[in-house]
Amino acid sequence: MAWPIIHMECPVSNSPERPPATLGRNLSRLRPWVQTGFLAVWLAPVGRWLHGIPGCVFHCYSCPLSSFACPIGVMANYAALLPVVGEIPYLLIGILLLVGAVSGSLVCGWACPFGFLQDLLGKITARKINLPSWTGHFRYIVLVGLVLLLPMILGYKGIPFERQVISICRLCPAGALEAGLPYSAQSLLAGNGWIMSGLKTGVLLSFLAAALFIQRPWCRMLCPLGGLLALFNRFSLFHLRFNAKECVECNLCRSRCAMGVKVDQAVNVTGCIRCLECTTCGALEPAFALPSKNSEPPKSLAT
Amino acid sequence: MICIRTSPVAGSSGTEVWGDLVALLVFKTSVGLNKVPGGFDSHPPPPIFQNGAFSMFKRIPQPPVNPALRAREGHDFWPGFVVVLAGVIVTFCGARHLTGVDTVDGNTATEIQLVKAFSSGGLQFPDQVAPPPPPNLNDVADAGAALDRWAKQQANVQPPAWKIRVDLGAKAACPT
Image 1 (tube, one colour):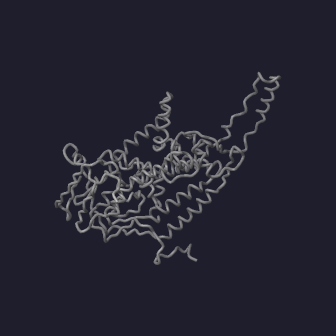
Image 2: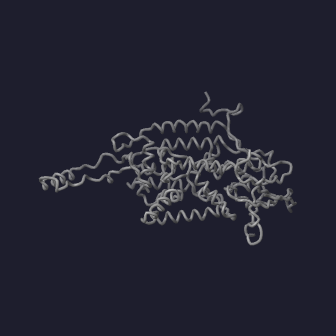
Image 3: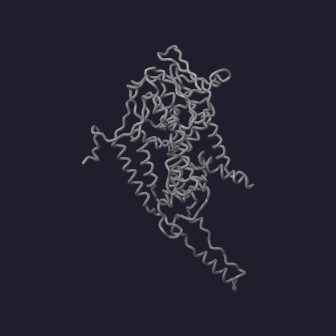
């Protein structure tokens, strides 16, 4: 079957004894189409019909076309409400546990609309800046500081999340792009001027510029949801498996990784977005953990 | 269209594969800039980025892979399964969970209604509830008495017992 895309034949590997992995090549060609398909899920034409259910990707719920609620926005709202009413977001926790334990950060590479946008922006320029891997820790600073602690502290002082001057929603480039930009454009056309704040406009422009020269800058450095889901990579049912017998040291796995993961050392790590581009080499393959006769259940489950 | 020629590369046991590619790069990766001698890139950038004025777009050399350093990374089934099970149970409970927050109608808001209120500006706080307007002095017979009654009512108004409630009909485009 020929994929409906401009074909660029993959040349043979520099290891003459082994052809390039067909599965990896097909996955690489399929991924943009899956990402496009998921856009139709997150940007449902009927809009706002499932806003009561948190989604599992980074996506602004104030977007005129959004269908699900933004998990980070929901998390920050709950954090602000915690000192007031003491509610726990069971639905959000359950969905994140479910998605994380099944697939890890697979949704980042295959379903996230914001990641897809960054992938497309990354095509425009050829030169890319390599970021050191420790920049990925900023994601957890954003998660704990901006998404959980700051709204909680300000909520304790009696400031509702909507009125908090500094919050994740006021700094979020996805919010600026998906909600701020359309509403501001609408306001501009109606003659009411640009309503998006200067700070948010600056964040949006900076992000767009950064995405041209850094592969997935938001995902690599700042995305709190990606950081959270990536914690599941070490034990999620879906994972990447390395077959040492197949490795011919062609370095293809590492050269294909947009996230700068040191694939030659470990691949199920927090920096991985599971785009599966590295599987083109053939030594790495996607796998799903199943119960086997050799694996014993943990003592807590054993009867 | 792609042309391939192989040539031995100094310092490498393999051969270099060059692809002179003329095609749109839409939906194709532009990574692979970190290729090493002897490496391989299935989607190389077009020749314009490889030669001439664009020669600054050089690949960043990286050390070759070392399979001896890498773990096999097979995952066990049970830890993931336990977390999946926990996720299913918590999701189910969350979908049926009644929060401690009331709606404007006086009912208890479900978690789904509360989440929906976040995106539609549906959270109401006591200081947001406007007091009843003063009586229209043109429509009442004894304007002075009506005004006094209204003032007394306002003086005796107690702050609402609720700290927060959910307005299910709110439709603010962007609460923040």
